[in-house]
Image 1 (cartoon, rainbow, N blue to C red):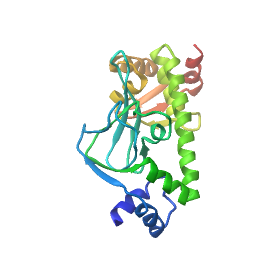
Image 2: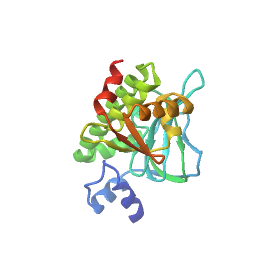
Image 3: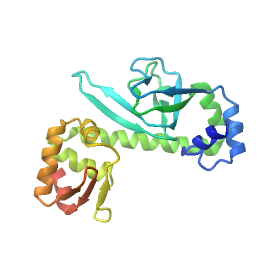
Image 4: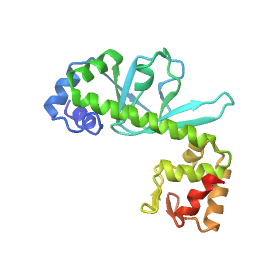
Length: 228
């Protein structure tokens, strides 16, 4: 139980809870712990919406396969992060996306009823749950905005500014995932992503160190790309 509590306290939901308080909350439910190997699926598209999960360790991705067959990665989930909550508390009877283990990992699953019980027992957890839901809605809104851009260069500029918080005061960005994953997120090919990144470097708008560190050299010009 101590290991479980330690993992759960990494979640925004439970971060400030005392160990004994959190233990009482968790023990008031019939939770399920699932261990997964890489590429195993937690939830598949069209599977019945009944569980909300929290990652205890490892990494997951929430993926959507478009009608054209293109894979779009909507979210990456690591230790302490929640998934499945939007579908479970909606009118949907099926998950719209699949949740896949990207590494060996372990998750805890709560039924809708048990998770709702936790929310009703602790107002602080409820408040943080609403905060997370609101942030997810905002993120999805920016995702839709990103998909509205027609050029790859605009998608990259939007992602750097909105997803990675590039600004004149924050000019160093460390990519949280590989460029392959980034291209999937942007719904562009890897070759197009690399080509446009090279172009941005040639124009002295950004500089790339290694495989994951991007320095914004000219934020105004980066921002102006969105207006083209």
